[in-house]
Every structure is written in structure tokens, then in C-alpha cells.
Length: 166
Ligand code: ADP
Image 1 (cartoon, rainbow, N blue to C red):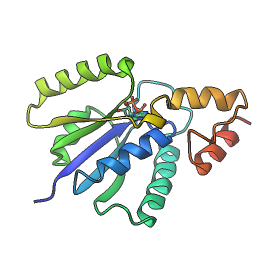
Image 2: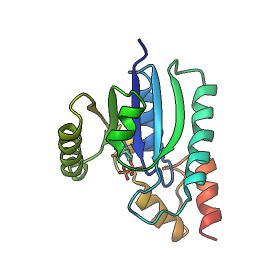
Image 3: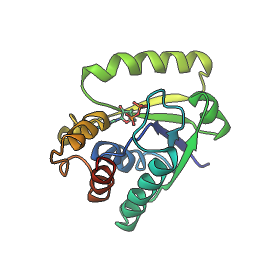
Image 4: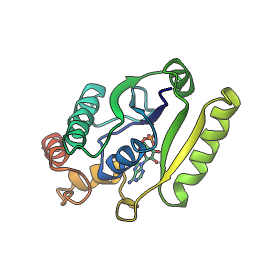
């Protein structure tokens, strides 16, 4: 039986923190769907197509390193995550957890999702020590102010951010 997991987010843009969760999430599942939210409720810097494209290129890079055996796919979705998870036959939702500030939101969302569908479990992977403070929103702010973002995102993403902020 193939075990499918969904890792959802805005990925605006993908950071080293997200990529770490993708690598680790791929170790605990057979099929990882990295699901990019179309209606993220924020006004994104990158369009949905750009976010999917950048993620796909970074995931191709992870695959080329040959360290993951699970199938990893990037998809976009709109509407309720829990409905998308069900229609994708996902057994679990994977989320990354940074400091305490993430906890309250994640706690609430997990509870609501469970009330809507108790079959799908949410699993949390704790952010790695070196990625603990990385957030797409901060990276965008630093890029806008012409700061050095090379420690937070891969080169391809740093270039895309620089291009956006011109
Ligand atoms: P959302 O808008 O759903 O919060 P994000 O793209 O900001 O989407 O994040 C997607 C998921 O990745 C969330 O579970 C978030 O907590 C997690 N995440 C974001 N940054 C990091 C990081 N630096 N380390 C680990 N997990 C992270």
C-alpha cells in the first residue's frame, strides 16, 4: 500500500526551512505531495505558477542528489486543504513547526481539520536548529531592503527574489 502525505503551504517563496521539511517528510512516506495553496489569504510576491516552478526546480535538485526514495510531486490546490487531502487519498498532512509562535495557529488548524475529517492525521516535524528562524515573509523583507539572503534560501530562489525586488 502506498502511503501518501501532503505538505501544504504558500511557499512564497520556498526557503531552506521548507526544503528541510520536504527532505525529512520524504523519508517517512512513499509519496509526498507538496501542495501550493492558490488562495493563501495573503497577497503573494510570486504567482502560483512561479511558486510551483521554483519548488519543482528545487525538488528536482533534491532528487538529483539521490538521497530520497519517495516519489515527490508539486501540485497546486484551491479550496479546503482537508478536502484536497481526501481527494488525493492522503493519509496525513505534514507541517513544519518552528518556535512557539507557530504552535497556536497549527494547534487550531489541526483541531478544525480533525473535526472535518478525523481519518487524516496531521504530523509535525520540528524545524531544524539552523532553520528555526527562517520565514518566507522575513526573507522577502530582507530582499526588499537589499540584504543578504544567501543563508536562508538556495541560490535560484535568491536570484528570483533579487529579480522581483528590482
Ligand atoms: P503557510 O502559509 O501555510 O504557513 P508557509 O509556506 O509559510 O505556509 O509554510 C508551510 C509550512 O512550512 C508550515 O507548516 C510552516 O510552519 C512550515 N515552515 C515554514 N518555514 C519553516 C522553517 N524555517 N522550518 C520548518 N518549517 C517551516
